[in-house]
Image (cartoon, rainbow, N blue to C red; front, side, top):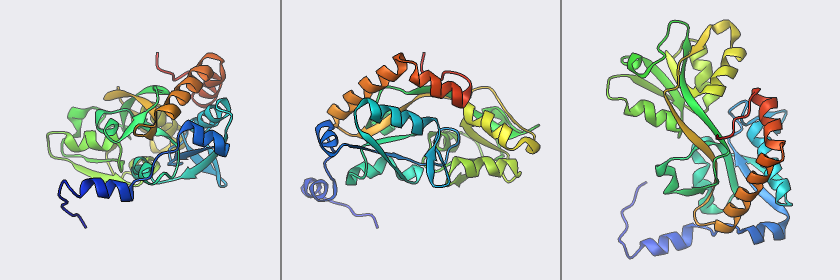
Amino acid sequence: MRRILTVLLLPLLFATTSAEARTLKAAQASGVLRLATSADYEPYNYMVDGKFKGFEVELGNLIAKQLGLKPVWVKREFDTLLSGFSTDDYDLVIASHAITSTRLQQVDFSKPHACGANVLLAKQGGPLTSKALEGKKLGAEAGSTNLKYLQKLPFQKQVTVFRTTDAAVRAVALGEVDAVLVDDLGAVAAVKTYSKANLVYGAPVWSSPTGMALAKGNTTLRLAVNAALNKVLLDGSYAAISKKTFGIDIRCK
């Protein structure tokens, strides 16, 4: 239920419902870096036999190692990940979040850890450009910038919200929607995964850098994460896991 509070009550609300984020010093004292991801977006982050896998999981483990901390992972729904900082459930989120002005009002981000484009994925002959989406059945993951992009298109269309990107991709492969908006490397993986579905993808619709999210104002940890990311970008370890996963280095140029 939504409530309307007076300005006088707002400080009390934040004081009683928001937990203070762990600083770098507190994380070092515990010996643990608490990481969160959606674990539903192969090949970036996913689970196999109860174990966290994927490019972003390996990157998170590298960051923790650089900080001298043990990585401990938790799984959360994508559209709840950023709000989890309010209860101090974890220190760092790595889940392919595009860095947007709207999200920057809620959380802070590391420097970008990847750059890519977003494309429309459809069956052969389906819509692959924004103009071709009018009157179509479309899909995207809940809480994603791709979902917001589709919802804002200034013409009639039907947009289905899926719990995960994998579910959205499965829907287009089964013909339940005409197209879904996903990142380009995810589209490449989908074409291979659903090789009998005759999936194709179009030219980039929009692009943005991807970053790791931290609680707003957690400056010491953000600077340490940036320093750790710089080290793995320079020492070849980032390139190794990127090329193993995608065949290319996806760092921002």
